[in-house]
Image (cartoon, rainbow, N blue to C red):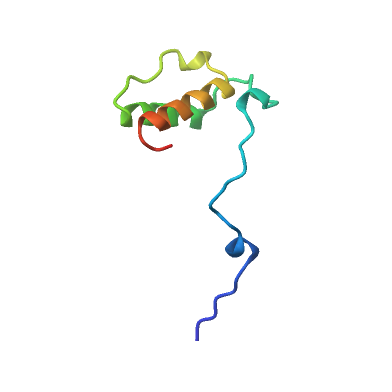
Length: 78
């Protein structure tokens, strides 16, 4: 016999997601881009048919996040 236990997560309305904090408001937003952000930017650029952003080393976490949002839209993932 299989019994499914409902959790709070199961009963939540998932049609809306809470607003994400604006990268400009991040306390760590001015830190350098992370490795995962760099990799994701390169992947998204390829999927969007664009060149990978130049000088990724100069991006901050907040700038990288905004660029990721832009590329997600361009790649049809946002």
